[in-house]
Image (cartoon, rainbow, N blue to C red):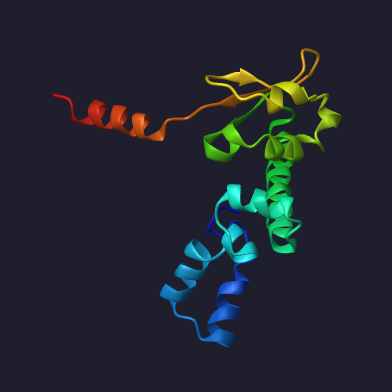
Length: 162
């Protein structure tokens, strides 16, 4: 689940919407990529707005947040199983870098791995790569800032340089 994109869904939904709602391919594309996700669940696509809705006990914002966290947990659990364990879990980009509640809630069911989050570290703002797990955590949890624009520029220079 993303701001406006649906995330995982049963592929049969496409045929159902085509048959029952008469939706065209372009309409389905718009629905799944521009009108779904957090926006479709709550009317809000920005996590900051979802968080404000949580503070206001807004049911739609709560649903969107809960779905978002559930999907993070599902993917984390799936990858832990596929890999047979993990040494590090990292959070990046806007939400991962800036929303301690998302990090805490996404990780709270991973205690069986020996993962422990230091709530003070998690809540503390910071710059650069920072550890938010406790010293005795079996899994290191990091917040890793990203700069996508800089990376795109570097890769562009690398492929266009003489």
